[in-house]
Each structure stands twice: as structure tokens, then as C-alpha cells.
Length: 177
Image (cartoon, rainbow, N blue to C red; front, side, top):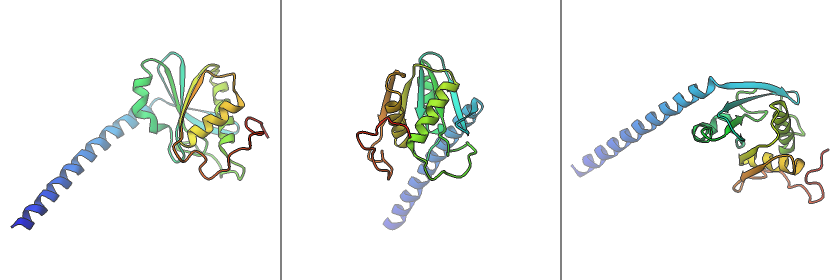
């Protein structure tokens, strides 16, 4: 009898968890559909970059991590766009961009150059840049190559900042190839 009550509690707990997860997924899907309608794209450095733009004011550029895309910022875009012009973009090899094979010399430096070209194409001079994980590394390289041209940057890299890459030597930071 005790074992049956325990199993029933576990079953009810699992069903409740499933219900909560499905509700969260439905809300996430509604956000995805709402934001996908706002999706734009342009070509820079020979690749297509999709981005989402919302709000007005000082631009805030959101850069996702390694395996993500622009959609990772959906829950923050609404809050930030109430005070700023928000641009969340997908880096060159991430959904929904259609880019050729990954180049052997690809790095966060290449991604930083894509970011610079994106900002130039959008005619943005002063921006705030927010990135996490590989996006933070991209923002860091961007900041080293453009130290005086942008307003500010926020890096949140955790322990995965270099993602298997060697750190640049002190004399090479900010230098282009």
C-alpha cells in the first residue's frame, strides 16, 4: 500500500512537471513567432546575418553564445527595447543564416569583424554591446580592434571564453591580420 502511494505521488509530480514544461514551451513558441516576424537580414563580409531590431534610443547589440542564435535574447528584448534600440543578431554560422562551410581560419576575430561590418551597414556609431560565452569573446575582440569608436561593452564569459582557442599574445591584441 505504501509503495502504491509513493508511485502515485511520483506519477502526479511527473505529470505536474510535464504540464509546467509544456506551458513554458508554449509561451516560448509564442515569443519565437512574435519575434520572427520582425527578423531582418543583410550581407556583410560575404555572409548573411539575420538580426532582430526593436525599440528606439541608444542601440544595444546582443551577441549570443557558441551554439545559440538571436532567439536566446527573446525574453530580454521586450524589457530592454522599452528604453533602447535593441539589435540581437545571429553570428555567421548560426541559425537562421545560410553560410557556406566553416572556414579553417574562423575565429572570434572573424566574428568581431562581422560585428563591425554589421554596425557599419546599420550606420551605428555609438552602441552598447552585450555578449556572453563566445559572444563575449567576439565583443572582446571587437573592443580591442575598435577601442574608441563604441560606447561600452558588457562581457559575460564564464569559464568558456576561449572555447578551446589560445589567448592572443599581449603584443597581438587588437592587431589585424
